Amino acid sequence: MKLDGKSIQAAIMQLVDDYKFDPYQVLEIVKAGIKSGFKKDFAQYKKSEILVNIEDDGTVKIYKELEVSEEIEDEEKQVTVKEAKKIRKDAEVWEQLLIDVTPETMELSRIAAQSAAQTIKQSLKAIERERFYEKFQNKQWELLKARVIRVHADSVILDIEGTAVVLQPDGQIPNRMYEPGEEIFVLLKQISKDQGSIVLEITQSTTEYIEAILRKIVPELEEWIITIEKIVRIPGKRTKIVVASHEEKVDPVGVMVGSRGDRINTVLSLLDGEKLDFIEQTEDPLQLIRNCLKPAHIDHIEIQDHKAIVTIEESQKALAIGKWASNVKLASQLTGYQIEII
Figure (cartoon, helix red, strand yellow):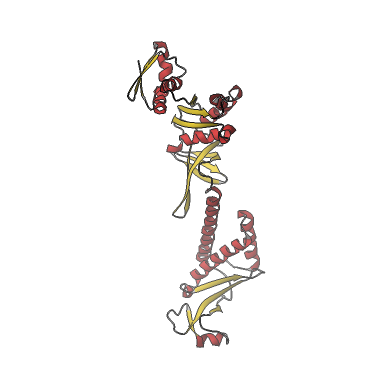
C-alpha cells in the first residue's frame, strides 16, 4: 500500500466525515497507524522511539527519536553528545534528536497495511467508547429511548443513540414479546468501563423503572405536590404504588390516574398488560390493608402481631387474591403484614 499525499489526505477527510471527529484527533490516529505499519516492515526500528509527521500536502515523514546522553544505556533510544553533534552541531545533553528514517518509497506491505488499519480501527473504537461513556455517565437512573434491533432466545439487542446495547433476561418484563423495530423505554441502572468496553446495565423489570416513567408523565411528582411512598411489583403482572399528597385539596390517586385516566393509560401502554394500582397513604394500618386489597369489599380485619386475618365474602375472594395471587402478595409487601384471607 503506497502512502502518497493525496491518499493520506483523502483518508483523513473520510474519517473526519464518517466519525465526526476533530481533524487533529484523526491525524494522530492515522499517525499511530502508519507507525504501527512501519515497525512491521522495518523490524530494526521495533524498539525505537518513532515519530510520524504528516505534512500539509499529506507527505509522510518518519523520524527516529533519540535522547542525547553522556552515557548510553539503550542504543535504540539514546545517542552520545559526540555522535549527536555530527548530526546537528548545537545538540546538547538531554535534548531530543530526530533522525529522518523515511524510506525512499513510502509503501507498506500487505501485513504492515493490515497492522496500520487495525491500529486505526482500535483507536477509533476507543474514542467512540469514550464518547459514549461521557454521553451517558450522568444519566444513571434516567429513562432512555431505545429501538429493538434483534430478539434472541434470552436477550434483546437494542439501539440506543446509534450504539447496540443488550437488554439481559433479568432486565426484561417476563413474558413480554419484544418486536424488532419497536421503540421502548429502558432505565439506565449503571454505566461502567470493563476491560476496554463500556457496559450499560439497563432494565424494565424494577420498581425504579416504574417510578422513572411516572416522574416523566406526572409533573406533580417533581414539584413535590405528591410523593411516591412505596412501590412493590411483580414484573409483567402487577404493580402497587402508595402515594401521598402534600397539599390538602389535592387527591394523590386522582393526580396519578389523570384526567379521564390519560396518565395511567400512558403508563399501562408501556407495561404491555401489567396492572397498576395507586393507593393513598394512610397511617391507619386497617385502612391501608383495605385500600391495598381493592377492588374487593372487606368485611373485617383482625391484626395479630405481624399477621392480618381478613374476613371476606366468597364472591370477593378472587378479587382480593388476584390473578397469580398477585393482589394479596403485593398488599402484604406494602403493608408489612402477612395477610390471610378467610
